[in-house]
Image 1 (spheres, one colour):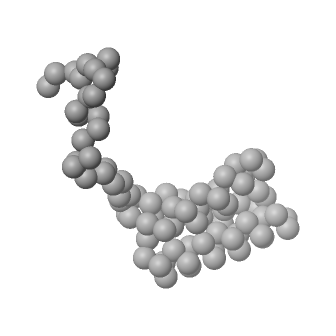
Image 2 (spheres, one colour):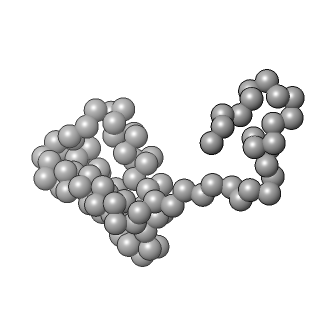
Image 3 (cartoon, one colour):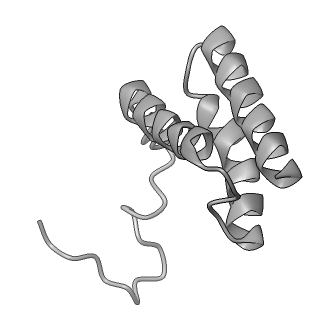
Length: 91
């Protein structure tokens, strides 16, 4: 395949509107394993195992990642994670 000319005023390959957009699909099993590992770390800890910055990151990303799972499973994992965070913050 030939590299496109970056100075071409109307590059055809870069503006091909007929090409379908790329869609990312996460592997639910990989997501599940990552969330379960994070939850297991929280359950095994007696004090907060993350810095405040990392905690904020996990509190934001955990629910977002769970969206790749079935709705009921995602809700249960998010509930358990939030409960563990509460326990650790109270410790």
